Image (cartoon, rainbow over all chains, first blue to last red; front, side):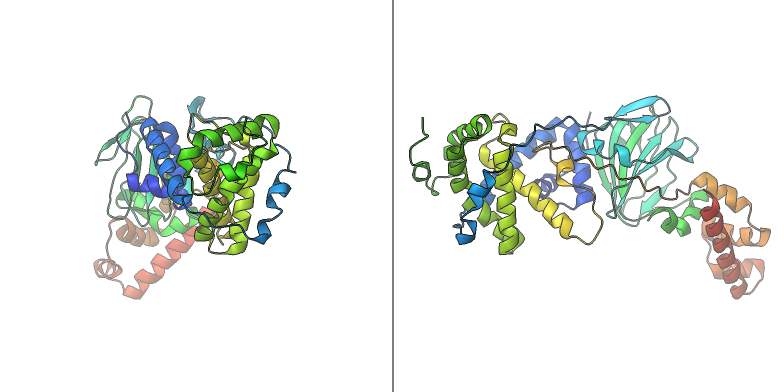
Length: 220
Length: 204
């Protein structure tokens, strides 16, 4: 069951189209998975539409031919079904992806082992942040870390906990410099998450601390 | 049947979107089923001035505002068949189209490489844009790799790196413990990091 939702304010900023793109992508994917936030977003959009379109600004001469120009345009073809495969594969297992992430299927690199029971696959979303699918096998742990920037996480399959709370499929979290956590999964089927960080993670214990000086190498 | 009447006159701009939602849904369905220019004309004269007001506020520029109005109304003409009255009112649908177009216009103005587009975020028009960019594979340093490389550092460098990066000691503390000058600790650290960096680069 989903317990961690975006705030109402985040949904409003998202619906107005004013949310920066990495958070917007996460919110969109969460909304795909969450009936409650779908309903909320529909109501928010209706309210925003009333506000946005309540005033008129008379058309100037430059608009004179616009309508007739538009009616010369052909009808658009019906949308084709998403051509991308809608699931992500890891070691023979297929994970369904929320609609918002399906376009990134073909921008996802190969899986590599991050440590022990932890797997990662990079996703190219441009310069706005570093996106990764992370899969934790049962007993898999992400080394304890804090965040120099912001870490957005959405659980796509299974459950994990991090010493702060337990997270289920569909849960959305935003962590920043204030939060130190140690994500690990004890779920029988493990846990798949999608995560975006805008700055490298800062590992706080053990051999993983050695990664900190090199973060610019794997965070480009 | 409304066709043939003076439609523009019937829907004065003072009528609020909510009050004419049913009629506007009808016009959208005429546009979808019959390419009815008369119906589109009504939609245009009602919504274009409203969109212009929104667009000027959002874009702060006449030319961009006009582009936003034109693109939005073009989508209404070309994709009226995608409107579903069960999901919301015509004004909400048209607002979300404008919102998406605005999002992509701002994205294109941004200096950064932004791959996240409005169609990914909001399934308003569910259009499919084929875009199969090659995945750029970043170098992925992993804990296992770095542990392996760390083990291959020369003994003196390893000692310094271990104290600083794993035990979290300051360079001065390390110097005092090992009874070596601070400058030596610094140069060993630098050499070790350079070595690790090279090993990481060569790792692929």
